[in-house]
Image 1: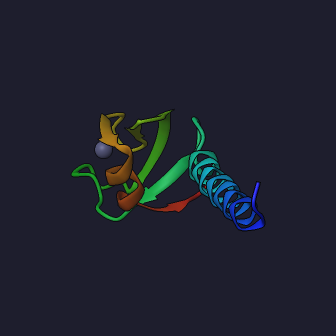
Image 2 (image 1 turned 120 degrees about the vertical axis):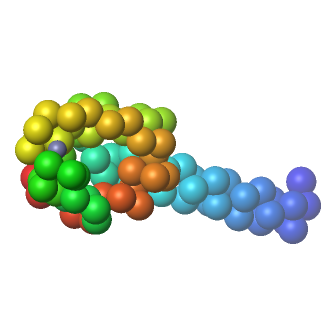
Length: 85
Ligand SMILES: [Zn+2]
């Protein structure tokens, strides 16, 4: 293998591992049972939600009234402003 090719393949591997690491960080950021705060408050007046599912979709249960919403991950990540615990 040429040195140039070797370097390129190393660079590619490094890049891939960084991307997957970042992916893991995003996935690890929230866990089922976490209490989060959202930008918009629910009509019941609560801004706190419990995560009941974390995956491709996020399921959030309103701590004020118990209402459950399902959001796609990107929407959920945008809506959530803070993790309480
Ligand atoms: Zn509510």
